[in-house]
Amino acid sequence: MRSAALALVVVVSLAVTACSGGNKSGGKAQKKTIVLTMASQISGGQPAQLERFAAEVARQSRGAMRIDFRPNWRAGEFRQERNTIADVRTGKVDLAWVGARAWDWVGVTSFDGLVAPFLIDRYRLEQKVFEQGIPQRMLTGVSRAGVVGVGVLPGPMRRQLGVRSAFARASDFRGATVGVQGVVAADTLSALGARPRQVFARTSLAGLDALEQQVGSIMGNQYDTTARYVSANLNFWPRPFVIFAGPKIYRSLTDEQQGVLREAVTATVPDAVAASKREDTDSVSVLCCRGKLRFVGLTPGELQGLRRAVAPVYERLERRPNTRRTILAIEALKRGTPRDPALGCVGSRTAARQQGASPLDGRWEMSVRHGDLVGNPAYGHHTPTAEDLRLDEGRYRLVLRDGRVTWSLLGPATQSYSTGVFAVRGGTIVFRMTGGHDAGDPPWTYRWSIYRDVLTLRRVGESIPNPAFAPWHRVR
Image 1 (cartoon, rainbow, N blue to C red):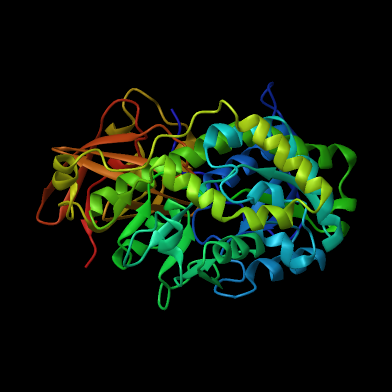
Image 2 (cartoon, rainbow, N blue to C red):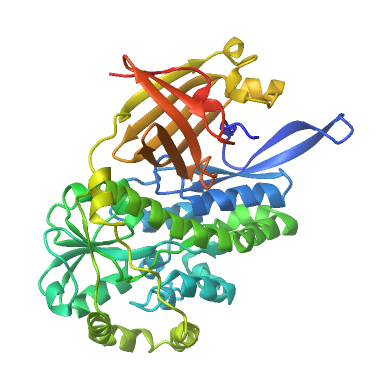
């Protein structure tokens, strides 16, 4: 059994810290830990794909290397991704990730085949493309931007979010102002007759008729408070994560340490595909719970019509021999690869039951001291170690709203932060963490009761004990 509290290491860029740890004989040995800072445009908990990469770096290096995320990097800047690439090149941060779409802006076109319109439009195909090593071979191109490519991870599919109307045929795009990110995306929407507008992460929908976006972002940014339609089976392209390093910091690493970074990417690919699919599933669950968005399915004829409309984009892309070879290789893999199921709510009755706030919605806090943990029944048959007691102590916060959960711990020995979704089923609540330190955990299940704004949770099965340590008090 594992505690939900995971240590958050706070360090300076490429800090080398002397750490002591027990060996198998119970003695102590000294080792040096290299901590690499990594810029991320995501605030709070990081995407599960990147959390898995960071965990794999630690595992592959046996704790000798750590990734320290710097969230919300260049937040709200129109040139967020381009400026992040420059920050890595000049050494302001050791590592970063940006979407494959961003590299055109800095003269790198090697990723264009990965984001060609309607080409990689299903997760099974995306997995095949990564298994063939196609994205990794594109990495050499980033040297033109003065940085070093580390690896590429699969990401979620980008869809069409309609603010006031649905988008199914090329005629629906004509004259519409559509928020996009990247040169290929802009060319695609222009070919469909739309007016593309470059936007940044977490942009406002003001002035837009539609937005090209993944459902996780639609859910997380609560775009469904304004928009009303999202494509159920129209996938423009994936949003892969391109991980790269500054040349100076990369050269300072040994061959073995550089290998750890590369191997960590390779080992993370299957989990990253699974995390992307799970992100879709969990986000759709929340969106259906809110009941504000309609999922619009396109017919095979409508999908083929959109593909024909973007032929000019392919003519431009295929003028470059490398991109043409990439597109042909992906098209060969695509043949015989079945489509993913269309997104959508389970059914009107289920959706109706789920709509509206649950009785648990709100902000809750719980403070737990060392003395409260000794002999705490929430541990069940597990006897906590001294380290468990040390890490589990602190102030917990639980924010439940519209099917989304934010879970955090601020303690004297640790900090932990996770995000995800939850569902209330009678007297049971189930949490599924999709971001942050607990991303990818098996579901946490508890029996709940509320009396006079005091919430009590009791574990069901092997869920983590922490939420059941003490009563939660509603924060006004």
